[in-house]
Image 1 (tube, rainbow, N blue to C red):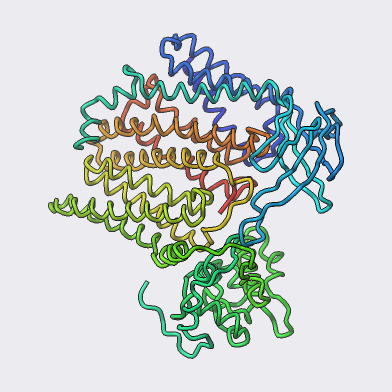
Image 2 (spheres, rainbow, N blue to C red):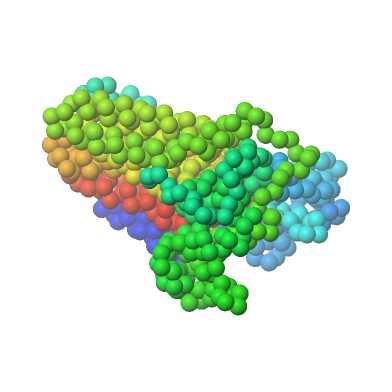
Length: 635
Protein backbone atom coordinates (compact mmCIF):
# COMPACT_ATOMS: atom_id res chain seq x y z
CA UNK A 1 0.00 0.00 0.00
CA UNK A 2 2.75 2.44 1.00
CA UNK A 3 4.76 1.55 -2.07
CA UNK A 4 1.81 2.23 -4.40
CA UNK A 5 1.16 5.56 -2.66
CA UNK A 6 4.83 6.52 -3.03
CA UNK A 7 4.78 5.65 -6.73
CA UNK A 8 1.63 7.72 -7.36
CA UNK A 9 3.03 10.64 -5.33
CA UNK A 10 6.29 10.58 -7.25
CA UNK A 11 4.46 10.27 -10.57
CA UNK A 12 2.38 13.36 -9.76
CA UNK A 13 5.42 15.47 -8.86
CA UNK A 14 7.41 14.34 -11.91
CA UNK A 15 4.42 14.86 -14.22
CA UNK A 16 3.89 18.38 -12.90
CA UNK A 17 7.55 19.21 -13.46
CA UNK A 18 7.63 17.82 -17.00
CA UNK A 19 4.27 19.34 -17.95
CA UNK A 20 5.57 22.91 -17.45
CA UNK A 21 7.78 22.38 -20.51
CA UNK A 22 4.99 20.88 -22.65
CA UNK A 23 1.75 22.09 -24.20
CA UNK A 24 -0.98 23.43 -21.85
CA UNK A 25 -3.22 20.74 -23.34
CA UNK A 26 -1.46 18.27 -21.03
CA UNK A 27 -3.45 19.57 -18.07
CA UNK A 28 -6.71 18.50 -19.68
CA UNK A 29 -5.51 15.13 -20.92
CA UNK A 30 -7.09 11.91 -19.68
CA UNK A 31 -3.89 10.52 -18.17
CA UNK A 32 -3.20 13.70 -16.21
CA UNK A 33 -6.69 13.70 -14.73
CA UNK A 34 -6.46 9.97 -14.01
CA UNK A 35 -3.20 10.57 -12.17
CA UNK A 36 -4.86 13.10 -9.88
CA UNK A 37 -7.80 10.76 -9.31
CA UNK A 38 -5.30 8.10 -8.19
CA UNK A 39 -3.66 10.70 -5.94
CA UNK A 40 -7.00 11.54 -4.31
CA UNK A 41 -7.79 7.84 -3.96
CA UNK A 42 -4.48 7.34 -2.19
CA UNK A 43 -5.33 10.14 0.24
CA UNK A 44 -8.68 8.53 1.03
CA UNK A 45 -7.09 5.09 1.51
CA UNK A 46 -4.39 6.52 3.77
CA UNK A 47 -7.00 8.29 5.89
CA UNK A 48 -9.02 5.10 6.32
CA UNK A 49 -6.10 2.75 6.99
CA UNK A 50 -4.42 5.04 9.54
CA UNK A 51 -7.69 6.18 11.21
CA UNK A 52 -6.56 9.71 10.45
CA UNK A 53 -9.73 11.27 11.91
CA UNK A 54 -8.22 10.65 15.34
CA UNK A 55 -5.75 13.45 14.54
CA UNK A 56 -7.98 16.38 13.52
CA UNK A 57 -5.20 18.60 12.12
CA UNK A 58 -3.64 15.91 9.94
CA UNK A 59 -7.09 14.73 8.82
CA UNK A 60 -8.15 18.24 7.79
CA UNK A 61 -4.90 18.76 5.87
CA UNK A 62 -5.40 15.61 3.80
CA UNK A 63 -9.13 16.27 3.42
CA UNK A 64 -8.33 19.75 2.12
CA UNK A 65 -6.45 18.30 -0.86
CA UNK A 66 -9.39 16.01 -1.67
CA UNK A 67 -11.69 19.06 -1.57
CA UNK A 68 -9.36 21.13 -3.75
CA UNK A 69 -8.96 18.35 -6.30
CA UNK A 70 -12.71 17.82 -6.36
CA UNK A 71 -13.24 21.54 -6.79
CA UNK A 72 -10.76 21.67 -9.63
CA UNK A 73 -12.49 18.78 -11.36
CA UNK A 74 -15.91 20.43 -11.01
CA UNK A 75 -14.51 23.69 -12.33
CA UNK A 76 -13.08 21.90 -15.36
CA UNK A 77 -16.37 20.11 -16.04
CA UNK A 78 -18.98 22.79 -15.29
CA UNK A 79 -17.45 26.27 -15.47
CA UNK A 80 -18.58 28.80 -18.07
CA UNK A 81 -15.80 31.26 -18.95
CA UNK A 82 -15.67 34.00 -21.54
CA UNK A 83 -15.80 37.75 -22.05
CA UNK A 84 -18.28 40.54 -22.70
CA UNK A 85 -17.46 43.68 -24.70
CA UNK A 86 -19.72 46.60 -23.72
CA UNK A 87 -19.56 49.90 -25.67
CA UNK A 88 -20.20 53.04 -23.64
CA UNK A 89 -23.92 53.80 -23.31
CA UNK A 90 -24.95 50.35 -24.56
CA UNK A 91 -26.22 47.17 -22.86
CA UNK A 92 -25.41 43.51 -23.39
CA UNK A 93 -27.44 40.45 -22.44
CA UNK A 94 -24.97 37.70 -23.39
CA UNK A 95 -21.26 36.92 -23.39
CA UNK A 96 -18.97 34.95 -25.68
CA UNK A 97 -17.54 31.78 -24.13
CA UNK A 98 -13.97 30.66 -24.71
CA UNK A 99 -15.24 27.88 -26.98
CA UNK A 100 -16.93 30.44 -29.26
CA UNK A 101 -20.56 29.88 -28.28
CA UNK A 102 -22.76 32.61 -26.87
CA UNK A 103 -24.28 32.28 -23.39
CA UNK A 104 -26.93 34.46 -21.70
CA UNK A 105 -26.17 36.73 -18.73
CA UNK A 106 -28.44 36.70 -15.66
CA UNK A 107 -29.19 40.43 -16.18
CA UNK A 108 -28.61 43.01 -18.88
CA UNK A 109 -25.48 45.06 -18.14
CA UNK A 110 -25.04 48.63 -19.35
CA UNK A 111 -21.78 50.58 -19.45
CA UNK A 112 -22.43 54.11 -18.26
CA UNK A 113 -18.80 55.25 -18.36
CA UNK A 114 -15.27 53.85 -18.56
CA UNK A 115 -12.23 55.68 -17.20
CA UNK A 116 -8.52 55.18 -16.68
CA UNK A 117 -7.07 56.45 -13.40
CA UNK A 118 -3.42 57.52 -13.42
CA UNK A 119 -0.69 57.75 -10.82
CA UNK A 120 -0.17 61.29 -9.53
CA UNK A 121 2.21 63.26 -11.70
CA UNK A 122 2.40 60.80 -14.55
CA UNK A 123 0.74 58.88 -17.34
CA UNK A 124 1.15 55.36 -15.97
CA UNK A 125 -2.29 53.80 -15.33
CA UNK A 126 -3.14 53.05 -11.70
CA UNK A 127 -6.55 51.49 -12.33
CA UNK A 128 -9.18 50.81 -14.98
CA UNK A 129 -12.75 51.47 -13.88
CA UNK A 130 -16.04 50.48 -15.52
CA UNK A 131 -19.14 52.23 -14.21
CA UNK A 132 -22.03 49.86 -14.87
CA UNK A 133 -25.77 49.82 -14.48
CA UNK A 134 -27.67 46.59 -13.75
CA UNK A 135 -31.46 46.75 -13.42
CA UNK A 136 -31.15 50.46 -12.73
CA UNK A 137 -28.64 50.00 -9.92
CA UNK A 138 -25.07 51.38 -10.24
CA UNK A 139 -22.06 49.06 -9.92
CA UNK A 140 -18.32 49.60 -10.33
CA UNK A 141 -15.84 47.07 -11.67
CA UNK A 142 -12.11 47.76 -11.51
CA UNK A 143 -8.86 45.88 -11.10
CA UNK A 144 -9.21 43.69 -7.97
CA UNK A 145 -12.82 44.82 -7.57
CA UNK A 146 -15.22 42.33 -9.16
CA UNK A 147 -18.97 42.27 -9.65
CA UNK A 148 -20.74 39.13 -8.44
CA UNK A 149 -24.14 38.89 -10.11
CA UNK A 150 -26.08 35.76 -9.12
CA UNK A 151 -22.99 33.58 -9.34
CA UNK A 152 -21.58 35.28 -12.47
CA UNK A 153 -18.33 37.08 -11.65
CA UNK A 154 -17.26 40.03 -13.81
CA UNK A 155 -13.61 41.18 -13.77
CA UNK A 156 -12.03 44.13 -15.52
CA UNK A 157 -10.10 42.53 -18.36
CA UNK A 158 -9.25 45.21 -20.93
CA UNK A 159 -10.68 48.06 -23.01
CA UNK A 160 -10.37 49.49 -26.49
CA UNK A 161 -9.79 52.90 -28.02
CA UNK A 162 -13.49 53.42 -28.72
CA UNK A 163 -14.26 53.60 -25.00
CA UNK A 164 -15.72 50.09 -24.77
CA UNK A 165 -14.82 47.95 -21.78
CA UNK A 166 -14.06 44.24 -21.90
CA UNK A 167 -15.08 42.22 -18.87
CA UNK A 168 -14.12 38.62 -18.25
CA UNK A 169 -17.11 36.51 -17.22
CA UNK A 170 -16.85 33.44 -15.04
CA UNK A 171 -19.65 31.21 -13.82
CA UNK A 172 -18.33 28.52 -11.50
CA UNK A 173 -21.07 27.72 -8.95
CA UNK A 174 -19.69 24.34 -7.86
CA UNK A 175 -15.92 24.13 -8.25
CA UNK A 176 -14.89 27.45 -6.71
CA UNK A 177 -16.80 27.05 -3.38
CA UNK A 178 -15.42 23.52 -2.93
CA UNK A 179 -11.86 24.68 -3.69
CA UNK A 180 -12.20 27.60 -1.27
CA UNK A 181 -13.46 25.17 1.37
CA UNK A 182 -10.28 23.16 0.75
CA UNK A 183 -8.17 26.29 1.28
CA UNK A 184 -9.94 26.96 4.58
CA UNK A 185 -9.44 23.35 5.72
CA UNK A 186 -5.74 23.56 4.84
CA UNK A 187 -5.37 26.74 6.91
CA UNK A 188 -7.16 25.31 9.95
CA UNK A 189 -5.59 21.85 9.64
CA UNK A 190 -2.05 23.21 9.39
CA UNK A 191 -2.63 25.46 12.40
CA UNK A 192 -3.94 22.51 14.44
CA UNK A 193 -0.87 20.46 13.51
CA UNK A 194 1.41 23.24 14.74
CA UNK A 195 -0.40 23.77 18.06
CA UNK A 196 -1.49 20.19 18.87
CA UNK A 197 -0.06 19.43 22.37
CA UNK A 198 0.75 15.83 21.43
CA UNK A 199 1.68 16.55 17.84
CA UNK A 200 5.09 15.89 16.34
CA UNK A 201 5.89 19.58 15.93
CA UNK A 202 5.23 20.40 19.58
CA UNK A 203 7.23 17.33 20.61
CA UNK A 204 10.14 18.63 18.55
CA UNK A 205 9.95 22.00 20.28
CA UNK A 206 9.80 20.32 23.68
CA UNK A 207 12.75 18.07 22.98
CA UNK A 208 15.88 19.06 24.88
CA UNK A 209 17.92 19.35 21.71
CA UNK A 210 15.67 21.89 20.02
CA UNK A 211 15.00 23.81 23.24
CA UNK A 212 18.75 24.12 23.68
CA UNK A 213 19.08 25.39 20.14
CA UNK A 214 16.23 27.82 20.59
CA UNK A 215 17.17 29.21 23.97
CA UNK A 216 20.86 28.48 24.55
CA UNK A 217 21.67 26.79 21.78
CA UNK A 218 34.91 49.42 -5.47
CA UNK A 219 37.71 52.13 -4.99
CA UNK A 220 37.78 55.81 -5.82
CA UNK A 221 36.39 56.52 -9.28
CA UNK A 222 38.56 57.75 -12.09
CA UNK A 223 38.73 61.48 -12.51
CA UNK A 224 36.36 63.02 -14.97
CA UNK A 225 39.08 64.61 -17.03
CA UNK A 226 38.18 66.45 -20.21
CA UNK A 227 34.62 65.15 -20.49
CA UNK A 228 32.15 67.67 -21.86
CA UNK A 229 29.74 68.14 -19.00
CA UNK A 230 27.90 70.46 -16.66
CA UNK A 231 29.63 71.65 -13.46
CA UNK A 232 28.99 69.64 -10.30
CA UNK A 233 27.46 72.66 -8.57
CA UNK A 234 24.89 73.01 -11.34
CA UNK A 235 24.03 69.32 -11.26
CA UNK A 236 23.74 69.31 -7.46
CA UNK A 237 21.37 72.27 -7.58
CA UNK A 238 19.00 70.13 -9.66
CA UNK A 239 19.25 67.06 -7.44
CA UNK A 240 16.02 67.83 -5.59
CA UNK A 241 14.12 68.95 -8.70
CA UNK A 242 10.94 66.89 -9.04
CA UNK A 243 10.29 64.93 -12.23
CA UNK A 244 7.85 62.32 -13.48
CA UNK A 245 9.41 58.88 -13.61
CA UNK A 246 7.75 55.47 -13.77
CA UNK A 247 4.33 57.04 -13.41
CA UNK A 248 5.08 58.87 -10.17
CA UNK A 249 6.73 62.06 -8.99
CA UNK A 250 10.31 61.56 -7.77
CA UNK A 251 13.46 63.61 -7.36
CA UNK A 252 15.81 64.09 -10.28
CA UNK A 253 18.38 62.23 -8.17
CA UNK A 254 16.27 59.07 -8.30
CA UNK A 255 15.74 59.30 -12.05
CA UNK A 256 19.41 59.98 -12.81
CA UNK A 257 20.71 57.20 -10.53
CA UNK A 258 18.39 54.62 -12.04
CA UNK A 259 19.04 55.65 -15.65
CA UNK A 260 22.84 55.84 -15.33
CA UNK A 261 22.91 52.53 -13.45
CA UNK A 262 20.75 50.99 -16.16
CA UNK A 263 23.07 52.23 -18.90
CA UNK A 264 26.48 51.87 -17.28
CA UNK A 265 25.96 49.32 -14.51
CA UNK A 266 27.10 51.89 -11.92
CA UNK A 267 25.46 55.10 -10.66
CA UNK A 268 28.39 57.32 -11.78
CA UNK A 269 30.53 57.58 -14.90
CA UNK A 270 34.27 58.41 -14.71
CA UNK A 271 33.83 60.38 -11.50
CA UNK A 272 30.77 62.30 -12.67
CA UNK A 273 27.75 62.24 -10.38
CA UNK A 274 24.55 60.65 -11.73
CA UNK A 275 23.03 64.10 -12.28
CA UNK A 276 26.15 65.32 -14.09
CA UNK A 277 26.21 62.26 -16.31
CA UNK A 278 22.56 62.46 -17.33
CA UNK A 279 22.56 66.21 -17.90
CA UNK A 280 25.84 66.13 -19.82
CA UNK A 281 24.57 63.31 -22.03
CA UNK A 282 21.43 65.35 -22.68
CA UNK A 283 23.15 68.69 -23.37
CA UNK A 284 26.26 67.49 -25.25
CA UNK A 285 25.12 64.55 -27.42
CA UNK A 286 27.80 65.15 -30.06
CA UNK A 287 30.65 64.97 -27.56
CA UNK A 288 29.15 62.01 -25.68
CA UNK A 289 28.41 59.78 -28.66
CA UNK A 290 31.93 58.36 -28.45
CA UNK A 291 31.86 57.77 -24.69
CA UNK A 292 31.73 54.01 -23.83
CA UNK A 293 28.68 54.40 -21.59
CA UNK A 294 26.54 51.36 -22.48
CA UNK A 295 27.36 48.16 -20.62
CA UNK A 296 27.17 45.08 -22.89
CA UNK A 297 27.31 42.00 -20.65
CA UNK A 298 26.86 39.32 -23.30
CA UNK A 299 30.08 38.25 -25.06
CA UNK A 300 28.21 37.15 -28.20
CA UNK A 301 26.78 40.63 -28.68
CA UNK A 302 30.18 42.24 -28.06
CA UNK A 303 31.85 39.95 -30.60
CA UNK A 304 29.12 40.58 -33.17
CA UNK A 305 29.61 44.35 -32.81
CA UNK A 306 33.40 44.13 -32.72
CA UNK A 307 33.70 45.73 -29.27
CA UNK A 308 37.05 45.57 -27.50
CA UNK A 309 35.71 45.79 -23.96
CA UNK A 310 32.47 45.45 -22.02
CA UNK A 311 31.22 48.92 -22.92
CA UNK A 312 29.89 50.40 -26.14
CA UNK A 313 29.60 54.00 -27.24
CA UNK A 314 26.53 55.11 -29.13
CA UNK A 315 28.72 55.59 -32.22
CA UNK A 316 29.66 51.88 -32.07
CA UNK A 317 26.04 50.94 -32.68
CA UNK A 318 25.59 52.85 -35.94
CA UNK A 319 27.60 52.45 -39.15
CA UNK A 320 29.07 55.23 -41.27
CA UNK A 321 25.77 55.88 -43.08
CA UNK A 322 23.65 55.81 -39.92
CA UNK A 323 22.28 52.25 -40.08
CA UNK A 324 21.45 50.75 -36.70
CA UNK A 325 23.78 47.77 -36.18
CA UNK A 326 21.87 46.21 -33.29
CA UNK A 327 18.65 45.33 -35.12
CA UNK A 328 20.21 42.68 -37.44
CA UNK A 329 21.56 40.87 -34.35
CA UNK A 330 18.06 39.56 -33.53
CA UNK A 331 18.28 37.30 -36.56
CA UNK A 332 22.01 36.53 -36.33
CA UNK A 333 22.09 35.50 -32.67
CA UNK A 334 18.72 33.75 -32.59
CA UNK A 335 16.64 33.07 -29.50
CA UNK A 336 19.66 32.39 -27.28
CA UNK A 337 20.95 35.91 -27.73
CA UNK A 338 17.58 37.61 -27.98
CA UNK A 339 17.44 38.81 -24.38
CA UNK A 340 20.93 40.28 -24.54
CA UNK A 341 20.10 42.13 -27.77
CA UNK A 342 16.83 43.37 -26.27
CA UNK A 343 18.72 44.66 -23.23
CA UNK A 344 21.15 46.66 -25.39
CA UNK A 345 18.29 47.84 -27.60
CA UNK A 346 16.47 49.09 -24.50
CA UNK A 347 19.53 51.09 -23.42
CA UNK A 348 19.76 52.75 -26.82
CA UNK A 349 16.07 53.56 -26.58
CA UNK A 350 16.60 55.22 -23.20
CA UNK A 351 19.37 57.42 -24.65
CA UNK A 352 17.19 58.39 -27.61
CA UNK A 353 14.32 59.22 -25.23
CA UNK A 354 16.73 61.44 -23.32
CA UNK A 355 17.79 63.21 -26.52
CA UNK A 356 14.18 63.77 -27.57
CA UNK A 357 13.22 65.22 -24.20
CA UNK A 358 10.77 62.41 -23.39
CA UNK A 359 12.76 61.01 -20.46
CA UNK A 360 12.97 64.09 -18.21
CA UNK A 361 9.43 65.34 -17.68
CA UNK A 362 8.37 67.83 -15.02
CA UNK A 363 5.01 67.43 -13.24
CA UNK A 364 2.11 69.52 -14.43
CA UNK A 365 1.16 72.57 -12.32
CA UNK A 366 -1.98 70.79 -11.17
CA UNK A 367 0.00 67.95 -9.58
CA UNK A 368 0.77 68.14 -5.89
CA UNK A 369 4.56 68.23 -5.34
CA UNK A 370 6.42 65.92 -2.98
CA UNK A 371 6.68 67.32 0.56
CA UNK A 372 10.13 68.37 1.74
CA UNK A 373 10.42 65.47 4.20
CA UNK A 374 9.77 62.99 1.39
CA UNK A 375 12.42 64.62 -0.81
CA UNK A 376 15.01 64.44 1.99
CA UNK A 377 14.06 60.83 2.74
CA UNK A 378 14.42 59.87 -0.93
CA UNK A 379 17.84 61.50 -1.17
CA UNK A 380 18.95 59.64 1.96
CA UNK A 381 17.69 56.33 0.57
CA UNK A 382 19.54 56.91 -2.69
CA UNK A 383 22.76 57.93 -0.91
CA UNK A 384 23.08 54.80 1.26
CA UNK A 385 24.28 51.69 -0.67
CA UNK A 386 22.08 49.32 1.33
CA UNK A 387 22.48 46.27 -0.93
CA UNK A 388 26.28 46.57 -1.04
CA UNK A 389 26.63 47.05 2.70
CA UNK A 390 24.29 44.16 3.53
CA UNK A 391 26.01 41.48 1.46
CA UNK A 392 29.47 42.64 2.56
CA UNK A 393 28.46 42.60 6.23
CA UNK A 394 26.93 39.14 5.92
CA UNK A 395 30.04 37.69 4.28
CA UNK A 396 32.29 39.35 6.90
CA UNK A 397 30.06 38.03 9.68
CA UNK A 398 30.24 34.52 8.21
CA UNK A 399 34.06 34.71 8.14
CA UNK A 400 34.16 35.82 11.79
CA UNK A 401 31.77 33.01 12.76
CA UNK A 402 33.97 30.38 11.07
CA UNK A 403 37.18 31.86 12.53
CA UNK A 404 35.70 31.65 16.03
CA UNK A 405 35.96 27.87 15.70
CA UNK A 406 39.74 28.17 15.54
CA UNK A 407 40.18 29.09 19.19
CA UNK A 408 39.01 32.72 18.96
CA UNK A 409 35.59 32.69 20.71
CA UNK A 410 35.45 36.50 20.92
CA UNK A 411 34.92 36.56 17.16
CA UNK A 412 31.60 34.78 17.66
CA UNK A 413 30.28 37.86 19.48
CA UNK A 414 31.73 40.07 16.74
CA UNK A 415 29.91 37.97 14.12
CA UNK A 416 26.64 38.38 16.00
CA UNK A 417 27.15 42.14 16.22
CA UNK A 418 27.82 42.31 12.48
CA UNK A 419 24.66 40.29 11.86
CA UNK A 420 22.63 42.71 14.01
CA UNK A 421 23.95 45.68 12.01
CA UNK A 422 23.10 43.92 8.74
CA UNK A 423 19.58 43.11 9.97
CA UNK A 424 19.12 46.72 11.05
CA UNK A 425 20.11 47.93 7.59
CA UNK A 426 17.73 45.44 5.97
CA UNK A 427 14.81 46.59 8.13
CA UNK A 428 15.63 50.26 7.55
CA UNK A 429 15.88 49.70 3.78
CA UNK A 430 12.58 47.79 3.73
CA UNK A 431 10.73 50.49 5.70
CA UNK A 432 12.18 53.34 3.64
CA UNK A 433 11.27 51.64 0.38
CA UNK A 434 7.76 50.98 1.72
CA UNK A 435 7.29 54.68 2.54
CA UNK A 436 8.73 55.94 -0.74
CA UNK A 437 6.86 53.52 -3.00
CA UNK A 438 3.64 53.80 -0.96
CA UNK A 439 3.22 50.03 -1.08
CA UNK A 440 4.71 46.92 0.46
CA UNK A 441 7.97 46.39 -1.50
CA UNK A 442 7.51 42.76 -2.54
CA UNK A 443 6.52 43.11 -6.20
CA UNK A 444 9.63 42.08 -8.16
CA UNK A 445 12.71 39.87 -7.95
CA UNK A 446 14.87 42.53 -6.28
CA UNK A 447 12.33 43.36 -3.60
CA UNK A 448 11.43 39.76 -2.78
CA UNK A 449 15.13 38.87 -2.55
CA UNK A 450 15.64 41.66 -0.05
CA UNK A 451 12.63 40.49 1.93
CA UNK A 452 14.03 36.94 1.99
CA UNK A 453 17.42 38.20 3.18
CA UNK A 454 15.74 40.10 6.01
CA UNK A 455 13.79 37.03 7.14
CA UNK A 456 16.90 34.83 6.90
CA UNK A 457 18.91 37.33 8.96
CA UNK A 458 16.23 37.21 11.64
CA UNK A 459 16.24 33.39 11.61
CA UNK A 460 20.04 33.23 11.85
CA UNK A 461 19.96 35.68 14.76
CA UNK A 462 17.31 33.63 16.58
CA UNK A 463 19.30 30.43 16.13
CA UNK A 464 22.79 31.90 16.49
CA UNK A 465 23.26 30.09 19.81
CA UNK A 466 22.94 26.80 18.01
CA UNK A 467 26.59 27.00 17.07
CA UNK A 468 29.04 29.23 15.24
CA UNK A 469 29.09 26.94 12.22
CA UNK A 470 25.29 27.12 11.85
CA UNK A 471 25.38 30.91 12.21
CA UNK A 472 28.23 31.15 9.70
CA UNK A 473 26.44 29.00 7.14
CA UNK A 474 23.25 30.99 7.65
CA UNK A 475 25.01 34.30 7.08
CA UNK A 476 26.81 32.85 4.08
CA UNK A 477 23.49 31.76 2.53
CA UNK A 478 21.81 35.09 3.32
CA UNK A 479 24.87 36.92 1.96
CA UNK A 480 24.66 34.98 -1.29
CA UNK A 481 21.01 36.06 -1.70
CA UNK A 482 21.95 39.63 -0.80
CA UNK A 483 24.69 39.54 -3.44
CA UNK A 484 22.16 38.35 -6.03
CA UNK A 485 19.86 41.22 -4.98
CA UNK A 486 22.77 43.63 -5.39
CA UNK A 487 23.41 42.33 -8.92
CA UNK A 488 19.71 42.63 -9.79
CA UNK A 489 19.62 46.25 -8.62
CA UNK A 490 20.59 47.55 -12.05
CA UNK A 491 16.84 47.92 -12.73
CA UNK A 492 14.66 50.63 -11.15
CA UNK A 493 13.03 49.48 -7.94
CA UNK A 494 10.86 52.32 -6.60
CA UNK A 495 8.24 52.30 -9.36
CA UNK A 496 4.44 52.06 -9.45
CA UNK A 497 2.81 48.67 -9.78
CA UNK A 498 0.77 47.42 -12.66
CA UNK A 499 -2.92 48.03 -11.79
CA UNK A 500 -3.59 44.34 -11.20
CA UNK A 501 -0.71 44.19 -8.69
CA UNK A 502 -2.14 47.01 -6.58
CA UNK A 503 -3.85 44.59 -4.21
CA UNK A 504 -3.65 43.72 -0.53
CA UNK A 505 -3.75 40.06 -1.61
CA UNK A 506 -0.36 40.59 -3.29
CA UNK A 507 1.26 41.66 -0.02
CA UNK A 508 -0.23 38.71 1.87
CA UNK A 509 0.62 36.21 -0.88
CA UNK A 510 4.24 37.28 -1.38
CA UNK A 511 4.95 37.74 2.34
CA UNK A 512 3.73 34.22 3.13
CA UNK A 513 5.59 32.63 0.23
CA UNK A 514 8.90 34.43 0.81
CA UNK A 515 8.80 33.67 4.56
CA UNK A 516 8.22 30.02 3.66
CA UNK A 517 11.11 30.04 1.17
CA UNK A 518 13.35 31.54 3.85
CA UNK A 519 12.45 28.74 6.29
CA UNK A 520 12.99 26.11 3.60
CA UNK A 521 16.27 27.74 2.63
CA UNK A 522 17.35 27.52 6.25
CA UNK A 523 16.81 23.75 6.16
CA UNK A 524 19.32 23.72 3.29
CA UNK A 525 21.86 25.52 5.49
CA UNK A 526 21.20 23.02 8.29
CA UNK A 527 21.63 20.12 5.85
CA UNK A 528 25.02 21.41 4.72
CA UNK A 529 26.20 21.71 8.31
CA UNK A 530 24.91 18.25 9.24
CA UNK A 531 26.64 16.64 6.26
CA UNK A 532 29.90 18.45 6.99
CA UNK A 533 29.71 17.48 10.67
CA UNK A 534 27.91 14.09 10.82
CA UNK A 535 28.04 14.04 14.62
CA UNK A 536 25.39 16.79 14.67
CA UNK A 537 23.14 14.97 12.19
CA UNK A 538 20.30 13.94 14.51
CA UNK A 539 20.26 17.22 16.39
CA UNK A 540 20.20 19.14 13.12
CA UNK A 541 17.44 16.88 11.77
CA UNK A 542 15.21 17.88 14.68
CA UNK A 543 15.96 21.54 14.16
CA UNK A 544 15.32 21.17 10.43
CA UNK A 545 11.95 19.52 11.05
CA UNK A 546 11.05 22.39 13.37
CA UNK A 547 11.65 24.72 10.40
CA UNK A 548 9.93 22.43 7.91
CA UNK A 549 6.50 22.25 9.56
CA UNK A 550 5.76 26.00 9.51
CA UNK A 551 7.63 26.38 6.21
CA UNK A 552 5.42 23.93 4.30
CA UNK A 553 2.25 25.29 5.89
CA UNK A 554 3.16 28.91 5.10
CA UNK A 555 4.05 27.96 1.53
CA UNK A 556 0.64 26.32 1.12
CA UNK A 557 -1.04 29.38 2.60
CA UNK A 558 0.94 31.56 0.20
CA UNK A 559 -0.05 29.45 -2.80
CA UNK A 560 -3.74 29.44 -1.88
CA UNK A 561 -3.85 33.15 -1.00
CA UNK A 562 -2.33 33.68 -4.46
CA UNK A 563 -5.15 31.60 -5.91
CA UNK A 564 -7.71 33.85 -4.21
CA UNK A 565 -5.88 36.92 -5.53
CA UNK A 566 -5.93 35.49 -9.05
CA UNK A 567 -9.64 34.78 -8.72
CA UNK A 568 -10.34 38.33 -7.58
CA UNK A 569 -8.16 39.84 -10.32
CA UNK A 570 -8.68 37.50 -13.29
CA UNK A 571 -11.68 35.41 -12.25
CA UNK A 572 -9.65 32.19 -12.34
CA UNK A 573 -8.17 30.75 -9.16
CA UNK A 574 -5.85 28.25 -10.85
CA UNK A 575 -4.46 28.23 -14.38
CA UNK A 576 -1.51 25.80 -14.27
CA UNK A 577 0.90 28.68 -14.83
CA UNK A 578 4.53 27.44 -14.48
CA UNK A 579 5.04 29.50 -11.31
CA UNK A 580 1.91 28.05 -9.72
CA UNK A 581 2.84 24.54 -10.79
CA UNK A 582 6.41 24.72 -9.49
CA UNK A 583 5.27 26.24 -6.21
CA UNK A 584 2.98 23.22 -5.83
CA UNK A 585 5.90 20.92 -6.72
CA UNK A 586 8.01 22.62 -4.04
CA UNK A 587 5.31 22.15 -1.41
CA UNK A 588 4.81 18.48 -2.30
CA UNK A 589 8.58 17.89 -2.29
CA UNK A 590 9.12 19.42 1.14
CA UNK A 591 6.02 17.74 2.55
CA UNK A 592 7.60 14.28 2.12
CA UNK A 593 9.88 14.43 5.22
CA UNK A 594 6.89 15.43 7.36
CA UNK A 595 5.51 11.91 6.98
CA UNK A 596 7.05 10.06 9.94
CA UNK A 597 6.12 6.68 8.45
CA UNK A 598 8.86 6.97 5.80
CA UNK A 599 11.62 4.92 7.37
CA UNK A 600 14.29 5.79 4.81
CA UNK A 601 14.11 9.45 5.88
CA UNK A 602 14.59 8.65 9.57
CA UNK A 603 18.33 8.31 8.98
CA UNK A 604 19.89 11.76 9.45
CA UNK A 605 22.17 11.39 6.43
CA UNK A 606 19.30 10.42 4.08
CA UNK A 607 17.12 13.19 5.50
CA UNK A 608 19.72 15.92 5.00
CA UNK A 609 20.68 14.67 1.55
CA UNK A 610 17.03 14.85 0.54
CA UNK A 611 16.73 18.45 1.75
CA UNK A 612 20.04 19.36 0.16
CA UNK A 613 18.62 18.56 -3.28
CA UNK A 614 15.11 19.81 -2.48
CA UNK A 615 16.40 23.38 -2.64
CA UNK A 616 16.53 22.96 -6.43
CA UNK A 617 12.72 23.11 -6.53
CA UNK A 618 12.82 26.47 -4.73
CA UNK A 619 15.44 27.72 -7.18
CA UNK A 620 13.31 26.60 -10.14
CA UNK A 621 10.17 28.17 -8.67
CA UNK A 622 11.85 31.46 -7.94
CA UNK A 623 14.32 31.84 -10.81
CA UNK A 624 13.78 29.09 -13.39
CA UNK A 625 10.23 29.96 -14.39
CA UNK A 626 11.44 33.40 -15.48
CA UNK A 627 12.75 31.63 -18.60
CA UNK A 628 9.38 29.97 -19.31
CA UNK A 629 6.18 31.41 -20.72
CA UNK A 630 4.76 32.48 -17.36
CA UNK A 631 2.59 35.31 -16.07
CA UNK A 632 4.97 35.38 -13.10
CA UNK A 633 8.13 35.81 -15.19
CA UNK A 634 9.00 39.18 -13.68
CA UNK A 635 12.36 40.82 -13.03
